[in-house]
Length: 602
Image (tube, rainbow, N blue to C red; front, side):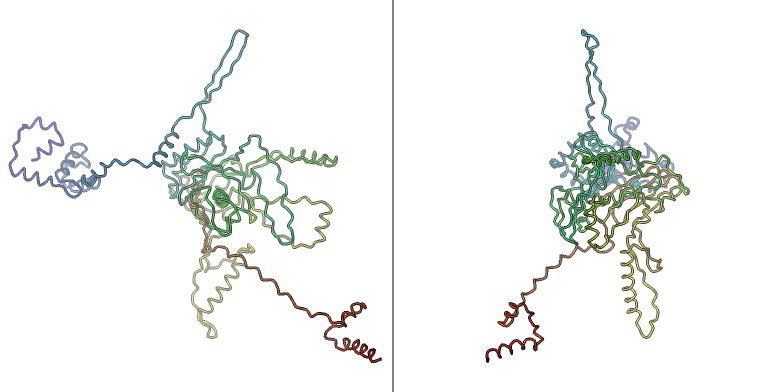
């Protein structure tokens, strides 16, 4: 019986043992009993064969010399040996189901990502002498621009519970490389992924891209019209290309190797409209945005507005890694201003002044050393915003002042207007510790006996109402509140340190509560860092979101007042040019009537 087992495991043993080995009837019944299969299609006979084979081949944990460990070895083998029932799987494998056309199309498009682009071939023809022609052909392989690899950064994001699967990250790297080579983009960065109802958006950020190579930017001027009457709002003018929220270009596609779409510039009206609505993305850039208040544009504009809001609120970096960009062309600008003043004196109309797009920040020459290692980056004071602040006007920069003539200045001085309240300018590289708190958690106070028979519940309700009024006033004024032991302030950022055993080999994770899905990491002493956003593209609110109420219905016009027709006496007084007596003064009204009566008697 056991010879049959060894015959299946080690066929070489059959040469030593005689080939003919008659089995008794009892052995045949025992073998048939052991070969009975369970519902999963596995028999004890097959299990013993595999145990003997593993013991002879590998002998794990010296199982051949330790028979006591055989039950544990058998139990571990059962965990790894799963066999589906053949009666159930044969029907599935027998069906020849072709893959869906969508899967075949995407697989064919993905295969093109792994093809090497053709090299750049250039040919030059030279004639050193009239009878000699030299033709030179140079072949240069195309070089992909350098950028932060998504696949390399994904291992850091995996430590903090975010990121993309390795296969998708590799495909995104390949399609970004292809896009950068076609459009010749610079400063490329994978912004993130916005999840939609019918499709997703992969977003790439790059330095400002212009379809026209000879495009020039000019200094922005005040182009807003005057309001038709007082207290009538006027639309804020949008920011020009290469400035403010339109400083960078954004490209989106629905899946790797799908056609890329360049998003249009964003306007202040779209930013403010996006602040007042909450709308899931559908995955179709041409879809209408049905909302109240009405959004000025389609989903492609709504996507661009949300990207601008996310970038302004979640783009952070370790302090000291980036520095503000210093302008080195101040002397040239001063000379240009002097030339413009001379032209104005001569009466020549000024030409539009060209403005070069300069970066906001530069990489620091030396990264500051951390006193406590990576533990010091677990403090909110050591993380800063490196993107411009988004003001209530819907712009990241202030609107330029209007050029006013002397006559207009005098007219404006005569008109007494209320002073405009402007927002304070936010500096670049401001610590995230100065951000507004996300929420407050009020813990209940200990009940105290009420005075003068007042119940403690009524007293608490009155105190809560007063506290809410104080909190709302303080938030509007922007004042810092006094610390209250019964109020727990929840900051907008959550920081955690992974691997705190080693001083400089940990990873710090920063997560935004205001924009769920926005994360950042720092590793290698702050030298390696990055940001990523993966979410539905909507801002979180501590309170329940309530849409704006409809505007008030206009009041009906006042009814026309009925007036009595003037009497003949009043007409005479008006013709004489005399004053008409009021209705209350009866004496003055009776005097002329008496005179008229006396005249008639005479």
